Image 1: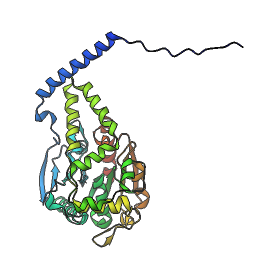
Image 2: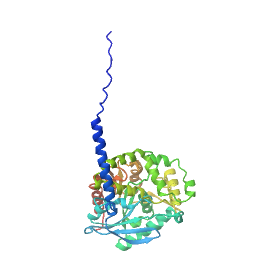
Image 3: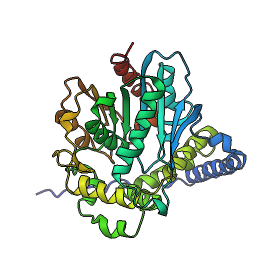
Image 4: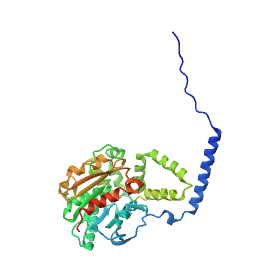
Amino acid sequence: MEQTTEKAPAQPKFDMMQMMNDLTGMSMKVMKGYQNLATLTPEDVAVGMTPRELVFQTDKIKLYRYKSLSKISCKTPILISYALVNKEYLLDLQPDRSYVKNLLEKGHDIYIIDWGYPSRADRYRAMEDYVDGYLNDCVDYVRKSSGFDKITLMGVCQGGTLSIIYTALYPQKIQNLVTLITPVDFSSNDAILFSWAKYMDPNPVADNGNISGDVMNNGFLMVKPMQRLDKFYSFANMMDDKTKMANFLRMEQWIFDSPAQTAECYRKFITDMYLNNSLVKNEFQIAGRTVNLKNITMPVLTIYAKHDHIVPPAATKPFNDLIGSKDKELFEFPGGHAGVFVSGQTQKLLAPAVSKWLHERSEK
């Protein structure tokens, strides 16, 4: 019998010249990067550039109204409620990647809430304070100042969850509800964060006071630790491009500008949402009232991100079937959690789709 032998796979040849060229190229990029960093000014990495004015304030919570960039054609005003754990300027990160600016250019009247930075003095600020107090105060201000009995409430991430709770309790004040990347059904295990939270006891942490933004942010970063390394590898390759470097630094500024979560709000959110999933069961209570999602009967637009690793689609999509609305739509957008608002791809998709939907349901 003839014996055959397998040839070992060919080993790649070591190319000394190619390695030297790569190292030289990287060294030149790094040198250029240092020059770019040395010449960057605060204006080069400024965020939230779309003009707005402070119109109302209560405690640390501020309400801003954006100045119109075109004739207001969608007259029902929009109030945006962002997450408590991040800053709202992600929606207006830079002029060429601004969800807010895109909506303003399409004729919308927009207000946005800045939840501020809670201190130790605010540790007992509960979810009731946010929903029945601050959010309700902002809604009433917009209603009064605009002359509309009902407004559009637009909630993002955790701010969307608060907006859903608010709308179920105060449906008479809301004309349209729009939620973006908002967790509702916390039974999902499609995201690591949801799996982790089911084994958390929030009480020992909350008993010691507020949960700092750094602690919260580190938890988010741990969900995809290798992604952080990939980002800095990408940064090293863009250091010779001042514009790309400035864009990167804007995003980094937002990521690490994380307000603390008040102890009592954190305790209730983890217990009632992640551990008990009370909202989808219509068992969630706030100030002695049960929040019934069937009370939400106005037009509802639910937007989720296909590749969201913080709020997976499975945590958002069930909301559409739990509400009493007949006019309701689900929209899927490409990208991840924050990428919905800042990626170049969605700039041409998100705001136009939301604007069209709202124009069709606005008072003329």
